[in-house]
Image (cartoon, rainbow, N blue to C red; front, side, top):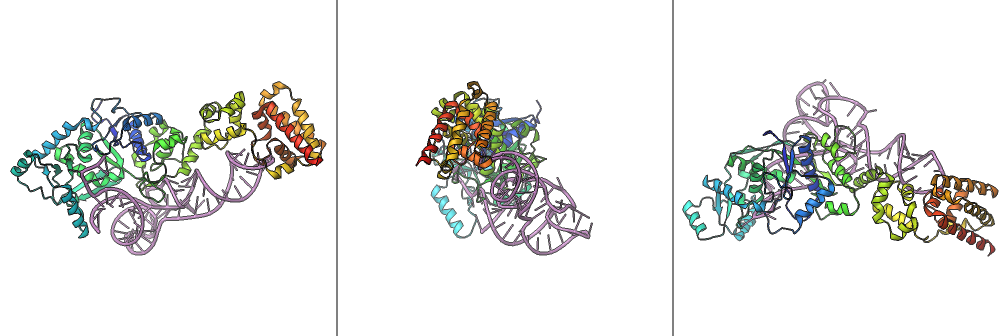
Length: 493
RNA sequence: GGCCCGUUCGUCUAGCGGUUAGGACGCUGGCCUCUCACGCCGGUAACACGGGUUCGAUUCCCGUACGGGCUACCA
């Protein structure tokens, strides 16, 4: 184990669910670390106790489990740099804050929320950038100490130096520099004793030996604060990589306000984890060739930060649907059958029984979601619904009636064991159709549409020779006899 | 408002000075076919704009426009 071991982290705040943007960030961290033989850490950033959501952590663990993304260290699994939940590391942050305070790099601020709000309002009104006016920065050490001793509420702010160019070297964006006078004296420790993100993430990334900080672009503007903190502590900087944002169709930052943004939503809708991962991987990253389908393992070996884009990417569910279909297509009939089994109606299950896999094989073409295939199957196994008048009209002739009678007799004569051999059954069906058709001068479209009308009463549906395999002998004959009856009735009227 | 990032088909993107600007999704035409779907073959559609640099810019530089992000005792 060398000092140069690659270590990345995914550090969500436990606000309830995994966002697809979060998935993308976690995925890139995972891919980057695994490609380099390094480790990925899960760290929970729960320093805002007003936004805590119960069960958020187990939810994360469950959803990553489902996705097949494994962390090397984290809240449940542990590791040598724990604890991995920030609320369990409070003393560590306070110690470090004291270090900064001792060097004059952090100072207590007693300003009330009201004063700060008022200050900001005035600044905005007068066209000034809203920034802390550093009122408490010049308080004497004695006064500060006295007020703290008296128990006055306060936060600790970082003392941002003047007129300094802070450089952020970003693996994706190159060098980005900030003038320190545009950087606010950020709060590092809140009045409730919890650190802010800025303090905690710097300390933890250092203590957890994170080599690469790969996170969303929304963090780029606060990175100079982090760089300054590393300098304050005299620590080596990690490498930074700021990922382009995932966007709504209107190109704004993807948020819960528009459609499904939680991984959970896609799981519920039947999206396959591998398809979701594959799709999300391609949002902002592109392989060196034109392939589109990648397993997690293939992504690991192909991934590189150099091929990550700078511009945001719209999360387009149309292409996700296609991707999902691609993954379904790759499943065997057996796998697919077992996957949709829970989604099929009970009556369809018992109706189709041992013919279910054949049904799946016949109907699976073009399936974009398990649920839709399951629905089609349930529907097909159920009694016929409304019939199409135009189709039924095809049966209303003496020829049709006689033809159907002959054809039905033929079907009835098919040996019982042939009904279990779907290929043979289909062949028999075709032969019978042709033979009976010939007797009445029917062929091609007329022939087949008449049969389709007789069997289903609908213009569309599965291939007829296979349909009878799905239905089985009893249902097929019942349907045909009904049609024969309908036809003779129609002409006698 | 300030700071920062970005800009190739509708969408995801390839391109790293000279290409008929490539692929994928979508849409669409055809083929296959009893129908639908699948599948196969084809089509549609893009370098935001203006200056430079250069023999030559989608590509490099600057500006403009447009879009986005951040601007909390939220992350």
